[in-house]
Every structure is written in structure tokens, then in C-alpha cells.
Image 1 (cartoon, rainbow, N blue to C red):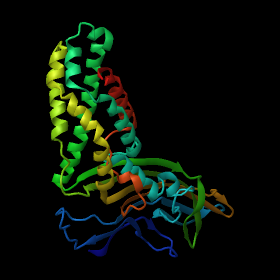
Image 2 (cartoon, rainbow, N blue to C red; image 1 turned 45 degrees about the horizontal axis):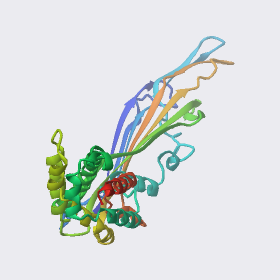
Image 3 (tube, one colour; image 1 turned 180 degrees about the vertical axis):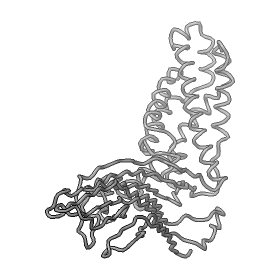
Length: 392
């Protein structure tokens, strides 16, 4: 990778004068300044086959200068001394470097923006403590150690619905199936990331803001005939977004066979309008369900300890716009013994600034852990397992 800089400038001319000390014109002015800092000669990543991102700084400045017209004559006898017409004034000399609070106050720090980007895009956003969830799941799952003979007896009992709330149990199983299907989906997404070598998230909105600096006064033109001031209004707009590529820190996918078989059994049986208790009991492997959640602690702990999703090619993009509007201050027309007639058109300078910064995340901690459920989902799952303990 090799850094490079490209520039482009545009110039034009305008105006005329018949003052000897000024010259006949037309007079040059700059209407465009364009600067690019980026990198070339990049090598593709051997793992992904993609070209790595690099820092970019692109600044385009468009100048539309105020135009001064000036006529000088004698108040005594009306003698004509000379005039200037359409004289370009300075368009950008009063530009502030940044809004008064600073760009960081409007956008946020790079560290804050990076954390926001990763939190928004992490495929397995950590919202629950896996060790705590594991302990609670194992405790709740111990309630589901069922004996098949007892279950068959219960299914044949005329008091089943009254004593054990069969309809509510069916609803609980439906909810449990929804949660375990979601777990299956999350793991399948993780497996897809493994097979594809990564998951790219781009165009992620991070922040936007605007600011208006107080109006300032400063010089916009001077020559042998005098100097002229202008009122400068500077407004600032910024928008920040980001992109990241998440890659898995493992080569083999997570086994989904048992979870898929359970979810398929639930879907098949619970899609029936009025499944009878015996059908549900025979179709859904409750004994495996108990074993699955008893052993889920080892599974989840292993995932948390060994499986990470790592962010790469993290980029923070900023689009900053600065608009500088200039209004000329006209001098008094009477200045004995001269009569000065002058006018100044409004001018505008627009700075269009695009930045891309490649960030190497640091001190991410638990953000990179592979997590399956949110805190609320884990709580619901534990409650459902406990409610199914009516079978024991």
C-alpha cells in the first residue's frame, strides 16, 4: 500500500477597471480547490480475497466570490476619476477551521463511534451474562427429568387438563419452540458467517449534527483605493456512518442437528389445530429436551470461551459540510471631497469534506463473545422450563 496525494485547482477571471493603479482587468480568482489523500497499490487479503480499506481525505472547496463595483467622482464639480466593475473579492479567507464547539463535540470521538458501530452490527449482540444464564438453565432443566411410564399414565388420566393445565402447557411448548427456533436461527447465522468467511455491515448510521457560528466581520478586499469588509456567516453540518466486516474465530460450524429435530417436531405437531396430549407427548422428544437443557451449560460455556466474532476492516466515514456566506459592507457614498458609489454582491464558499478512517478496535472485551439470547429471552426460557415442571 502506497500513500498518494492528488490536487486540482480551477481559476477564472472577472471584472474591469479604468483606474491606472488597479489595472484594466479582468482579475483572476480561484473557484475550485480539490485535494485527495488516499492509498494505491493495495494487495488483496489472502483469506477473503478482498482489497483492504484505507484512510481517505477528500476536500473540495467551491468559491463564488463577492463582486465589488466602485465608482469615484468629485463632489465639487462631478469630475469622474474612475470605476471598477465586478471586481472579485476574497472568498475564503475568513473560514473557521471548525465549529466553535469542535467537530468532536458534534460527531463524537472515534472511540465512541467505533463502539456504537460494533454494538449495532455485532451478529451476536451481548445482552445477557452467559455464565449466569447457564447456572439458571441447569437448575430449571433439572425439573424436567421425567419418567416415560409416569408421563404415559398422566396422558391417560381424565384429570390431566384440570390438574396440570394441559392447554396452558401446549401454549408454553409453543413459546418454547419459538425461542429454540430463534436460537437455531442465531447459530445458523453464525455458521453462515463461517461458510462465507465473514459478514459485512455497511452504511450504518452513527450520528449527525449541525451548528451555526456567530456572524463575524473581516476584510474581503483591499487595494490602493481602500479596503472593504464583509459579514461572514459560517454554518456546519456533519453526518457520520460506519462499516465493518465480522469474521468468526473458528473454522467448524456449531452442530444444530438435535435442536433442529426438536424444532421440526414442535412445528409439525403444534401446527395442528387441536393436537391431543398423546400425540404431542409421542412426537416431541421431552426426554431429549431435558437432557439438552441439562447439558446446555457445557455447550454455551464452550461457545463463550472459544467462539468469537472479530471485527475487521472497521471504517468510520465522516461527511462534513461548511458553508461560508459573505455579505459585503458598503461604505458611505459621501466622503468629502469625493463621491464614492459602491456595491458588493453576496458570495459563498462551500467546503465539502469526506473522511474515511480505518480503525483498529481495542479493549473490546465481552463485545466479541458469541451470545445466543437476549436477557429477556433467557428469562422467558427459564420461566417456560419451570412451568413445564408440572409433568414431573
